[in-house]
Length: 157
Length: 157
Image (cartoon, rainbow over the protein chains, first blue to last red):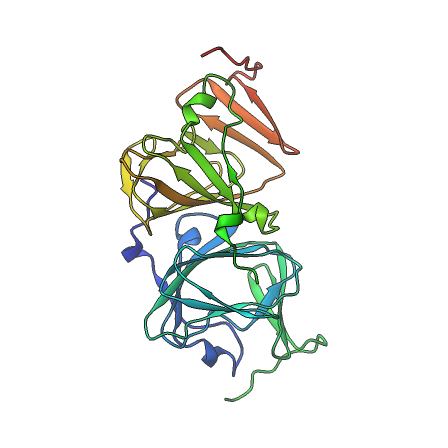
C-alpha cells in the first residue's frame, strides 16, 4: 500500500541556514513525505511549528512553484503587503519568480502544522527579503551569498 | 495576500474520459487551486467525492509524480495489491513510472475530499489498469487510445 505510516517517517530538525539565522529556526521540524515515498519531481513536507516557531526566513523562489495547506492549529502567513491568519484547510500558492516574500509563523500556544509542496528545480535561487542573504541550490548543494553575490560568512550569534 | 478564498475557486465538474467511462466519474468535482493561484509546474487540486463517487479510473503515470492527502471524510485507496482506508491527514505517494494503478473511492454516506498534487510534465502517458484504455497528454491535448495504440472510439453507454 502507498499510504504513509506517519509515525515511521523520520522527523527532520535543524536548518541549513548559516549562523545566526539557523538558530532562528528552532522549534521547526518536518516530515519529508515526498522523499520518503520516492518522489523526485517535487517535495511534499509536513512542517511542524512549535509555539513561537517560524517556517523559514521570509523568502521567494526564482524557479520553483510552492503550495501550502495548513493542517493543524493556526499559522500566520507573513508577506510583503500583509499578514493573514490561516486555519486547517486554508491554502496559499506562491508562483515562481514572484518577488513576494513569505513565511509562516506560529503565534499561538499550540503546535501548528502545514503541508508544503515545492518543485525540485535543477537550479534554484531563493532570496530572503528581510536580511542580506540569498541561496543558490544546484545538485543539492546550497551556496549562501549576500545579495551582491559575495560569499556569506556565518556569523557568531 | 496569497491565501485562497476557497468559496471563489470555480468548481470543476465533468470528465474528459471518453464514453462510457465519463459517466463513471459522476459525483466527482474539483477545485483547481494551483491553476487559480498561478502555479504552472504542478497541479494542486482539491477533489470532492460525493458518496459513491470515484476519483478516476484506476491508473498510473509514466512521467508525473503524484501525492495525495485526505482532508475530509474517508476514502478507500484501491491499488494493485490491496485496498486501504484513508482518513483526514493520511497521505500517499505515487512515483512516476511505477505501474501500481490507484484511485480513490468514497464508500461512505458523507462527502469526502482530498488534496492531490501532480507534476505538469510536458508529455504524459497514463495507463488505466482495469480497462483497455490509455491517454497521452501533450500541449494540454489528451489523446485516448487502446493499449495497442489504436484510436479509442467513444462507445454509447
